[in-house]
Length: 270
Image 1 (cartoon, helix red, strand yellow):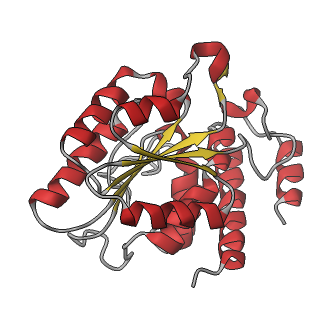
Image 2 (spheres, one colour; image 1 turned 45 degrees about the vertical axis):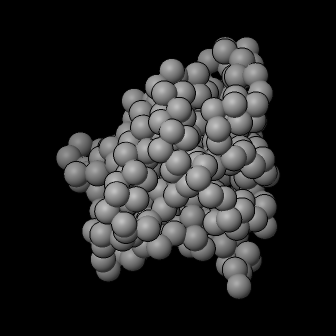
């Protein structure tokens, strides 16, 4: 049985480290990193078949952080899970550090795909999911996308591919916080009904509160029962979740955290 209280504590620790990393680096993307923490926490501490002692285990589940600019969230989760040391996350975005602004699978333990150029992660996830079936390894692949990222055309090519090859071991999760760097997704380039779009592409679509662990694990349970279709989870989230003055504020998509900001944020995350 999943202990949601324990997961909530882990999510708080991850959020604290997200703030620490971006503050120390003097740059980064706090808003979108904070909005996806609960999803990543659920994956890494209650769902995925992974082991920090066997990082390259061939039948491990794979995770692709397609919205690579939110790397602090995945780095903090990897640290919490035992993949990265404290001194490694302290080097975030610093010269000669392996923890770059976007994840690099060649330099960071536990990263399955280098990402950062938006729109490419789902295609990589499709390749991994197809390989799992071809090699009869039976692992699942989870891809986390930003909602603004869905404006990229390559996403829709991958969506067609996933249904064509019946990738029912593939779950794409959209961090639906409604904001991107230039404003709301509706203002910049309206996505319309994501449910209708992905359904028409042949996907099974689930909509949840992306901060509610019960709903997140409910989506995982549905995923286990879907056959012959990839699954999309629309996770409604709040940009900057957990830090009141960052919540639902577009400016915190990418912004330096000042000394005062840091003190206030860490006080709220005690």
